[in-house]
Length: 432
View 1 (cartoon, rainbow, N blue to C red):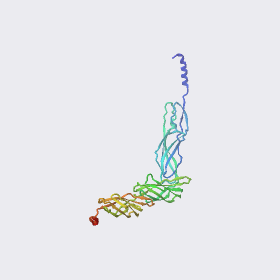
View 2 (tube, one colour):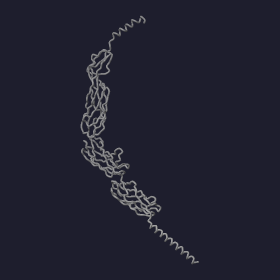
View 3 (spheres, rainbow, N blue to C red):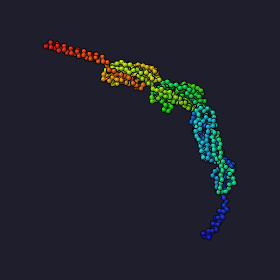
View 4 (cartoon, rainbow, N blue to C red):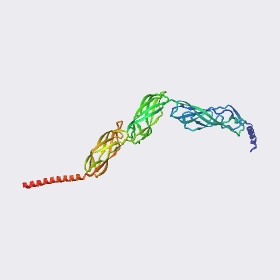
């Protein structure tokens, strides 16, 4: 180094030695101040799927501050709530909380954090206000541990853990709530139309105005409402109404009980049109109307025609009104009259039809079956047709005496023909 620079460096070193150390502000008083409230509505209805949004707010302030000589600033403030978790519980409220406690991280002051909970209001919740406990856990920097830590290269931080419970208020508001106290079905048969008669009671806490009771198909239920709405007007608390609906039953249904939903649309006290929660009921459905031939096999003579009687029995659960039977004659049979009127056949009832059936002379004696079906009217006067079923037929050979008679008949005819031919020859020879 050149000698001429030495004085300059000495002067700079002296200046640096006399510069003051930078002061750092430190807080020794205060802590987080956490409050909570529900954002949006806090009113819910019985049976409702609810979303409860909660705002946590930190309004903590520091009560004392001092300045120390050093270069290390604090990474946390005593008013910062660190590692905050918030868990909502139902307490004594008729609510099921479905969301676990949530982690919100740090909330500085002033600052806010939002947390959302899903819940279910029980269907039997009663009118009133309820308190939901919100348990908040966090820690914060203990202020008094900072006093006396003036060194610039070391800070020893201590934290205080806090758990507090904050009350949140929710309200169960009045509404129309329905209970189907009686449900009966008529002609609920696979593939047919029937009726459903409902008796519905308002067991809620509100009087419904301009109310309509709705019958709603439940998912893919086999019971399909044809009439879906019945207007009932005013539906007061504890009021009862009776409603009649037409329904159709799917043709691919089975004999079992199927669900259907019931709800009421009404105008509430605020003048809004709302819909109540649904009440699901079960309706028993009977199997498709079944008929069978219960008479013995009809007998037809080979090559002959006979008037045969076929007995039909209703094995179903409803009456086959104005029933008509049809018998399909196929080779080796023919029929000049394949239909017959049976009239009304109640469940378990029987009716007999008569058909004129001819068996071809080439028919092999033995047992046969012919297809038969019945067309009828259901309880709502809709035309229905049964599944095809079988009617037994037996073909028998002609008796032996009948063969001898036929031979004699053929012989007599031959004799007449030969006699006529001989007479003709005799007359012609005489003329010559």
